[in-house]
Image 1 (tube, helix red, strand yellow):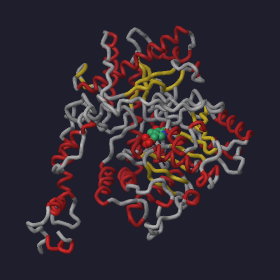
Image 2 (cartoon, protein in one colour; image 1 turned 120 degrees about the horizontal axis):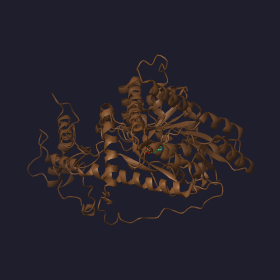
Image 3 (cartoon, protein in one colour; image 1 turned 180 degrees about the horizontal axis):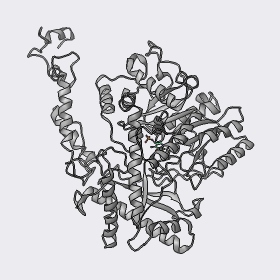
Image 4 (cartoon, protein in one colour; image 1 turned 30 degrees about the vertical axis):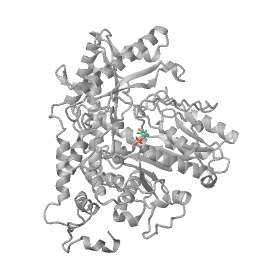
Length: 628
Ligand SMILES: *Cc1c(COP(=O)(O)O)cnc(C)c1O
């Protein structure tokens, strides 16, 4: 058909003539594939579609006393036939696509379930989910004000809220939402490189071996950031941690800074971890700031101080809490721990920039993280690029001129912002304090159980780490002390044997979580174990890879966890131990059934072991971040 005749295909009422070509008919049918652009009376048809989809998905929920996964088949996942996927010739109906999509959730862990506590994975709150979904409807792009309109306020207001909780001037601070705590870290490293080695690095590339100083227990995304930024993983210098607190040792840091200063090697950044995943170690930005001032770089710049607060930031919501009056009525023990967490986290004030994960300790959906800088315009000054020919500055604030990303979804910022509005300080305080109360209860019950011991009794983050000993060990606490301190070959052998027991219990619980059966009258919980929470006291330098402490983990992040859940957890962990003693072996079977190209096991790059760095790149436990 000639293009000039195109107009004849449509009748006056907007429907197609019967002689219209097939493309026009298919296209016309696809109007249904989109929400309407105009209002319709009554319930919006798309709201009905969404409601139906949520209902279909919700059919995967278990009964209230059911297992901790979605749906009826926990045996997967099934990756065996993925390479058979092809684009279908004809699209499926919306109902059919929804049905297939729901199927992909079969067997997945249900983060909201009381028996699910493997890691810092909080179920997402309603306001956060809904606000994020809203952005899927209208696609605000927070690259610039013109494309996001007032949705960009959700980012700007979050920055103001967080910076005032920190104690920074919200008229000077700013923030950008990005793709996770590792994204924040990446922003921190880039900011640091530009700030410390100079703006010219943006043109010439990095031409100096500037160092990144971070505690041994800092998160492994130090590798991602130095690698992808081009700074190089060999430029990480890991600073020893204090064996008692797991925090970065300030004397050790000073020694390294002194040496680098004396030899004229620049330091790009010192990273303080404000809450590690397992040990909840909190470094001291105040002490680090003093050292930064003492040891400037050869070019006169100061190393940047970035706080990786992705886990710890939310304790800042206690800024105005009345710790004397204790209006929320926390137990004495919990109050003490909250107050200590807050006091240490509040040193963030001394940072230049911080990263906060709302999808970790903010109960927001993935991804939802904000990188907040104390001085927005310093950051902008260092990072701004020329604008593009196809974007005009029609609105006064256009973060796309200095962000890593080009398009940025408003879903991050809307979810974070909505969560702040929905919870308020009191909501955060009760959620966070609630985690500690549950944890305190579990720890109390562990002290009552002679064959169990809590191994992180001194820290009060989001996790309880505990070891279960053989039923023949009369005093788990004494046995653990021995394994921690006694370097004799006999004690070391016991440590290793009992580490294996933790691993077996962890594997058996994992098997029970997934088999959908009752064990000792209950469904299996989803917990995890760490194979390197800390080193023994006689292995401070980590020279002995086996002299480390394995432990089972409980992260009671979700709101449905209560003392009865903790009773269940302890009971089934002991029962798993009994079953192992009775000869049950957990089946060591990796699920997924991967085929090519997913079965290859590429070896990590083997970097030089620098004299000053001695960083080991084989991070074995990706979650704890403790290199073994
Ligand atoms: C989880 C975590 C990260 C990485 O954050 P993502 O949001 O998973 O990208 C970085 N640092 C610490 C301390 C973490 O716990």
